[in-house]
Image (cartoon, rainbow, N blue to C red; front, top):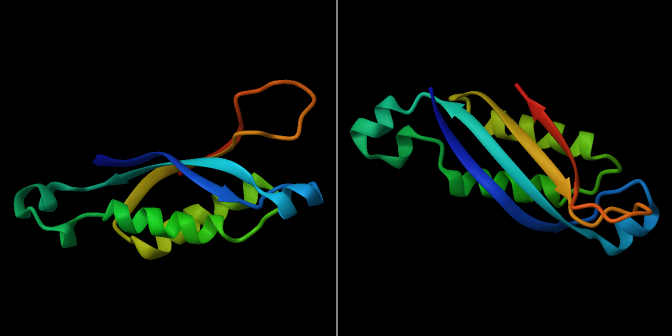
Length: 116
């Protein structure tokens, strides 16, 4: 198995428990790591034999555009959308991080990761 990764995809989205987060929005990053058998693509040099990372980005952008209260829901939806679009994916992970969470102290980010 090989790995295809999209790291620190930056997107503005409207996820959060607080109403203000869903009105104003926030900056998020998304990391995706996909386990795929890429032997065929390595020989063929054809995008049809791999998972096109540009299409992965489009899937993530579409799911991030749908507001959710919880990051847990967002990572679950992104994972399911990727698996529906790319049946050759055998495993992976999705991490969604909120860069400026509404907490009372300074933090780099808060995030939720799902692995399968």
